[in-house]
Length: 326
Ligand code: NDP
Image 1 (cartoon, rainbow, N blue to C red):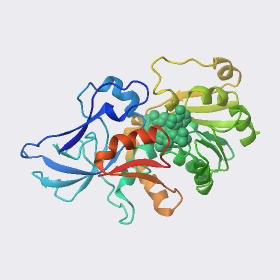
Image 2: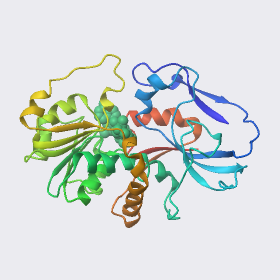
Image 3: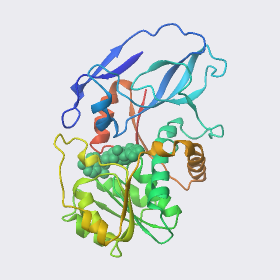
Image 4: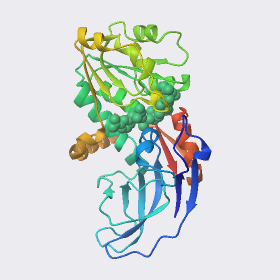
């Protein structure tokens, strides 16, 4: 099995030499165990902040994959079955089958299995539950999402449209803005090239914002808070602009906006809705199959390129879900 380990804790932005590829032989299977081979692996922003406390130098980096059983001593998990696992950045692994999640049984043949790591997996569920349960969008509401061309954001905007809202999104390249228009966003802007975030937000929605699905934090959040409508709802999903900070940054104080606009702001981790994942996954799969939810994947080929794929995703190289294909 080949695995990517973390050499040392990241300082600032992760660099290629923070990662080391190791190879080790796996022991023979015991009864009840299965050997799996990763076909697709996920690189996600959370790996940057989570690695700080969850990993020490030499540990295999955490993460999920779609993997196929290639040897089995467990009759319930026969050779050839595909599962989503959380085995880290590794090509092969042995599992006692407890943490393996089968792909939904009605998975259409024409859909890539990698979607179980994207639109029909954790990012999809994040968009679905975060938007519907915390932002509670009503028909006619204006929904703002940043990182809009990414795995989560691109779905947030589309689900907002399904619910009859106006969707406004920001992203870091003009190609991403074109993509956002193609998948149905009403208004888009490039947060890197606008001269003023406040003006761009006002121009995209002179009527303000009712829902704000927050992925970025920092200066963007400072500007967006001021454009919220009374009784607006803010789902704090991520703060990617701050993940590389060694010293926490402070911005303008937001309490007056929360107070006088009577806003509701709530952070969430998608695992909060773990029990409802099957129901969320069913709906996402249905929307994808019906073509109501368009997905885009940014595939990096080769397990050896996994650190580059991860760094590239943090730098905004991906449109849609960043995936590593072994
Ligand atoms: P994406 O596919 O959106 O990839 C990350 C994107 O972030 C990049 O493509 C880049 O796009 C953008 N980005 C990078 N640096 C900055 C910056 N300084 N300012 C603004 N944008 C930046 O990732 P995901 O969809 O997987 O994740 C999006 C957010 O959702 C993250 O904050 C993540 O932590 C969070 N998340 C939270 C979960 C939860 O349970 N709460 C679960 C899953 C994700 P661009 O070109 O536009 O800059």
